[in-house]
Image (cartoon, rainbow, N blue to C red; front, side):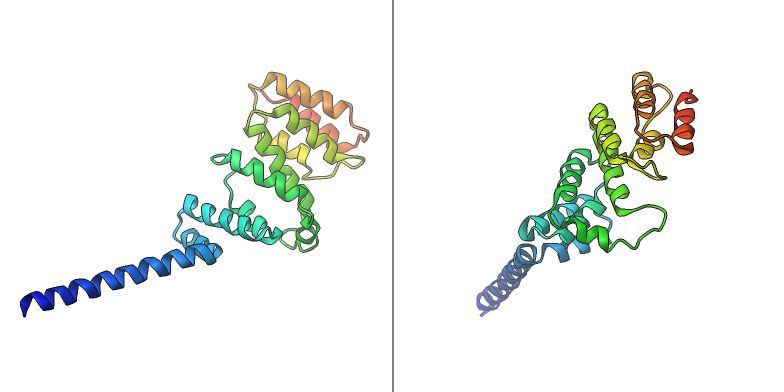
Length: 192
């Protein structure tokens, strides 16, 4: 009688554990964004980004990619950030993100995403690529919070002599010259 009770308890316990494993696996497979949000809420960066990445790979949706990109840590996860910032900027539906941008009136969506992409390129040791990309983003208008300013104010330091010289040359060669360009050039020259 005692063996029958122990067997019943073990079978019931194994069934419950098996059902929980199946439910967790199904949730991870069919709802990775939900799992990502749970880990994000718990403060687990790597697990949340893993599941946000799985959600984007599953759907290919620009909004899922945007969720992933906004969660990425540019400094500590720069390789993955470079990949996905590049991908969102080239995504066929990126204009939906730009059109729906309501976060800030001081920076446009294009400047935000392009600025972060420039910053991550520089973080990954591709400074000249970042500078070239920033110059291309400027075009015929040099406005506040453009990718060039992100590179200047968020990346350059006093000990980056070659990089500072390259930025000064790029600022001199821009097709547009205004007070912001002059102020940024002065800032770079005064980095000591």
